[in-house]
Length: 297
Image (cartoon, rainbow, N blue to C red; front, top):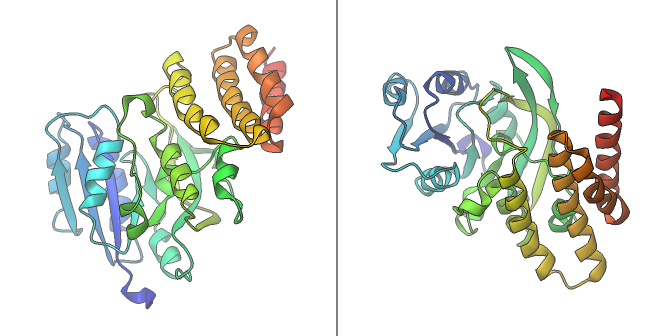
């Protein structure tokens, strides 16, 4: 395929983030590779999002889709936007995040024939400064499915560029309330299960905004959602050892949440289980949690 003719669709779900959306869209105006469209799928915003988008309609190849009812999460707007995509590849971008100016150009220069799913690192930005790098996981070429289930997980949605046909043939982002905040993780696992060919780029080609109003990672509802997600794969696994490893990953996430809530008495049994039965990545994750809490005392 001639990569010079490569056309990207950038799907942006948004809800009441007009100020952040300006920064997001500005990063697309500054892209050095220009062959792309932008689809902003508005999850029933009641701020001035519509007016902000109108300012870019003559600058970008931009489509604004407005959903009359808020769906309670980004899954539905992502799915709706992706269904409207005309590009060969779909890039997902949350409205409070933004791309580096060379992101699309970098991807356009890759040999894409043997790839279905491309992702990379992100810079975590807080209060206008880089806090740290969000490192993605370099998935196993032989078994990406179990690699995702055996690890602490790390493929940020705003780094993902997926072949449109692969996305269209997939289950899409789950629009279940039980998976809000984990719908991306669920989709990556489902894609891996069907043999999707992943490519990790060990570079920061975008920025993740760490604000004060992010979806809570530490509430009890998150624990319920993790149980809902992992139980499906535990039940489907035939090998006892694999069941234990997936269960250990679930226990790691629960232990991590309790540790971050300063409920160390509750986190202990989950972290011990994770360390005993988990993969190397899970064991190392437990050690980091323990060391972090020791040094805080």
